Image 1 (tube, helix red, strand yellow):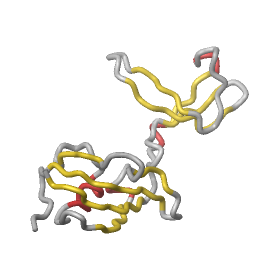
Image 2 (tube, rainbow, N blue to C red):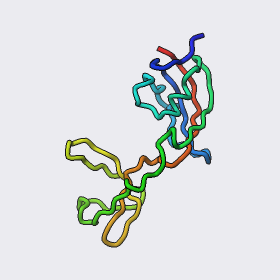
Image 3 (cartoon, one colour):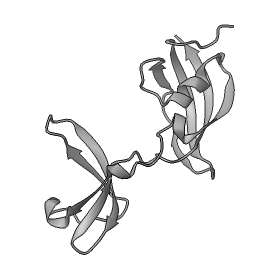
Amino acid sequence: MSKVKANDTVRVHYTGKLNDGQVFDSSLDRDPLEVQLGQGSLIPGFEQGLIDMEVNEKKTVTIPKEEAYGEVREELFHSIKKEELPSEITPEVGMGLVAKNPDGSEYQLRVAKVEEDHVVLDGNHPLAGKDLVFDLELVEIK
């Protein structure tokens, strides 16, 4: 049987969990993820976990935060005055917001703290600073 190698296009079912077993994402209720390896679209540890798998093989990989979304970066926390937010938004801790760069591209933020006159926004990926566990099932090598 053939095995997954660098730059292959694969279809894989996965369930992503935190170390405590909490599931944060799964493809089991939808089509398998189809992706070409080597394009930078997967976190490094996930992609490396697929290498050498055979079709129908299942395995569990533990991905340290350094091979996932990295450490929480303090420079990605920003304090802004509440009046800088759109008037229809009542900020709450954990709320997701979308901001635009000058070039029109968007990036995700989360409300980390709400104070009387300001909010602290977090630009880190929600899974930054966390080790991840993925159950993988290789469905197809294209």
